[in-house]
Figure 1 (cartoon, one colour):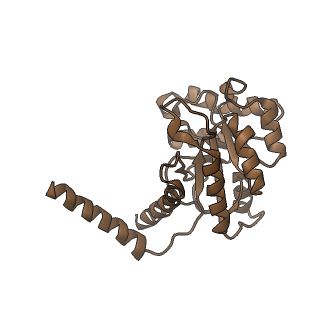
Figure 2 (cartoon, rainbow, N blue to C red):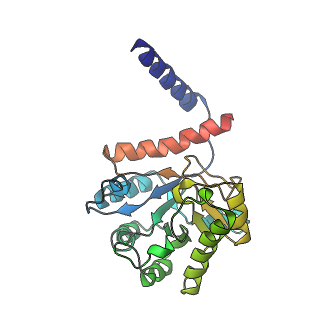
Figure 3 (tube, rainbow, N blue to C red):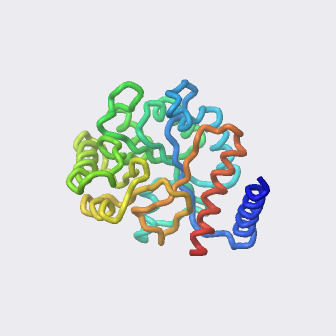
Length: 258
């Protein structure tokens, strides 16, 4: 028991040293959400649900801290010298393409005059609890960037190149041929990626891709390995949300040491 307590103390000490002794890192966070709803979900997925009241409180906090939401298309314009980032940018992303992103999340987002990126699983569109094409088109008209979460949400690194390309290409083509504007961004299912998949993304004319690895992003960050911090169903209110933001900052500091 004493060994465990000692190890914990040392670990906490290292975290404190990294956090307080190192300079603040540059970069902006990308937040990873899924659902915004009060509905009871499958217990296996309940952790990905943020209640609307909690979501609104999180946006209130971001505004009070001076954050300005941008899309990843906005970010890439800056990378290519066609714009400037706001003083404190942040990207809000939503994976899977749940219907509540349109019915519940969007009104809260618009009330705060914010924007976001929604990544959809194209073979789930139109099914129960998932977005429909006309809702996706309306989301785009209202300033939301739509991205791909592949066709079937399978971990791409577990399959061969032909399968990977089909999942990446077919989701993009389906959305664009259905009348949506060009799809430029992808969210890796289960956060699984490697350099071979990045090569396919470039060839299929994607500009960005987001991971599940915590950290901060700058114009020097590989656009196909953008860092994100997951926002889960809060059990400790806004304190937990602040911790998630701190986590992105902390991991950026750690990477600066490497």
